[in-house]
Image (cartoon, rainbow, N blue to C red; front, side):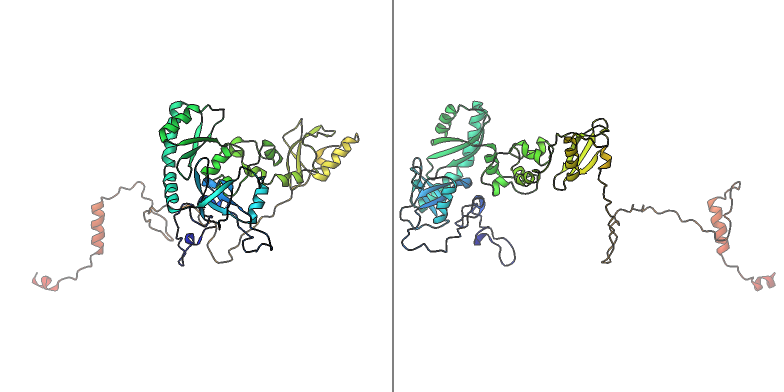
Length: 420
């Protein structure tokens, strides 16, 4: 959802405010991931109740914190200066009112906590200029920081840099698989950029959420668009959904298991409650049968014999439970062929030309060669002459004969005969 300046004009062409996520609506660019609609904004408070004095402020990459407001009339989208450590920082108000109380309860932040800092003032023009200069330094600082990392030989990756609003402090976000001793790195960074340095380690999922990208489904990554909490994903989620344990297909761009494996897991767990265990062996007179695969929502199972595993036998849930109950009672069934389900015949669908269009297989016909063949004389009702054994006349002679035949006969000149 974008603001009015980002919407399309009357001709359907997008205007594009080109603010790169810094517009006042709070719903463009990087802020769209965690944008919250204040559905209590048009409701008045009860008599005698004062408005909630804590606001939610958004910073770079969707980072949010709570700050105490001291008698300032603030609304969503305003840029304010808040308390930093040390100095001050610049952020955008993302939520006000009673919804902030609900968000604090959801994130388990106490209202009377000492960690909640203060709101200083609304950002002035000078504050915005310093903030913009600081943000323009982030790309160059990240590039030079990676050069320092390569020189020191540390096994860590510098993923992002965030400057504080006053430009006196920078937070370096990094990922690493092992514990890193970056004391020398902090000294080199502080001396190179003349700022206070803070190192913050983030996980691979958080790094993918910051960078963004396109997933195997063809859409933007869930972690960079709407997913806010990263739950643990393990291989059991893939086993319950009967997926092949192929790490190349199950891993996302972060290198970890895809978060979408948990989206439908509860539905599969509910369907598997009444299913027997997969390691159950069916006792038959023909031999023991073991599990091969199953269709969870159709409640169909495929079993095969241990001795003859070339043929699979399809059973439904009721038949499988019946066989298991008989085995528990000490009885053995004759064979799985007696319980095998008949495969339904799928009717062949034929498509008709109801609109008068061309055939659907018109492009499947082989193309005809465009080479012209020499014209051959057609002999209708006559046998083709056999020229074998005869000498062919020279081409010039044949042409002469043809020309002579074509010349009309001249009439005799009577005057010459009389003179003779």
